[in-house]
Amino acid sequence: MSNYLYLQCLDHAPALVATEESGQHLHDLPRIRADIAMREVLVRNLDKMENEQFMGPDTISRHFGYFTYHSAKFLRQHQRCIIGIVDEYGTDWPVEEDA
Image (cartoon, rainbow, N blue to C red; front, side):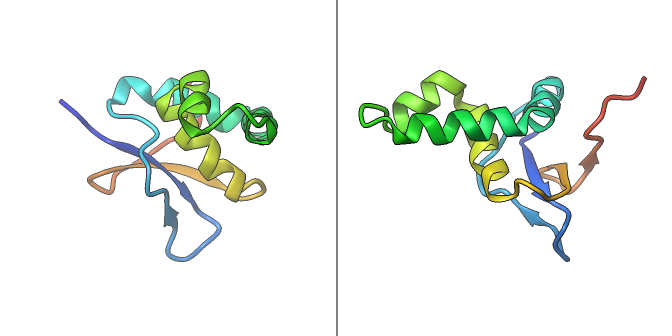
């Protein structure tokens, strides 16, 4: 069963939710958490790729992966913000996996 997952910026009230999904199933949560944890690297790589003349959005999406590309774009807009994960039903999911 699909359960679209989105990043959200919690530094705003109400939270700003990404318009593009970062995952489609709950089993995507570990990858989404890893994307958030390495946001500086993702943003740096996204900026570098966009500055390369031969790399358009389709090429970048294939490099990152469809969902990680969406995450990278949102994280670039909210580099210093507190980020959360929310699904299409409004359920919040923890950014860090429970031990």
